[in-house]
Image (cartoon, rainbow, N blue to C red; front, side, top):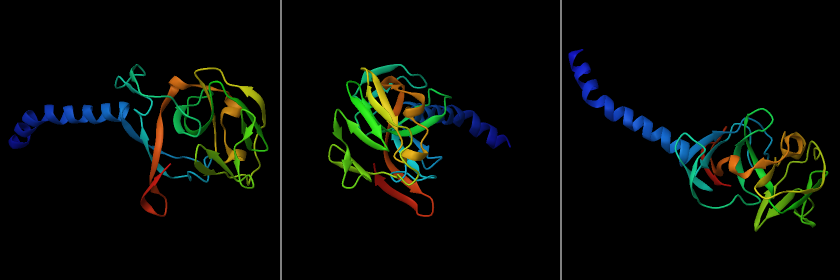
Length: 198
């Protein structure tokens, strides 16, 4: 018992410093997220675990929302983590509209600035050169008509359009409220460890 007390006395400061360092890293640089629902199918499945780059858009003072370095803007097609303006629930959704865009969604099909985002027969969308599969098995959810997005705001929508409580319900989010960018799935139920970049 005396040995344990002596060890704790000498090592406890280092252990505490390590714990605070890990927490600060998770707060400002990188973390993980557990996907609680199928609102992002087929990109993300319920139970997936994803790596989140919290410094993708800026470096923040640990444990605060104070940004000290701006590292870029959220882009259309990014999968991001933010708190719902409706009830504060942490969400993961795809950004389909950024400041300056005019967005329409009809039967789940996205149109950006007058150009359909559909790829093929409408079960996928293209963001830059990335093709994203949609789940329209439950319909397209609520429609939006010619929504103009002001600077600094974003429209976040799920890929499972008929089963996603998203910006079509709670409105636009502020770009500054995005915690980070989901970069890869690292664990999938039934498969174990995987590495699938988003």
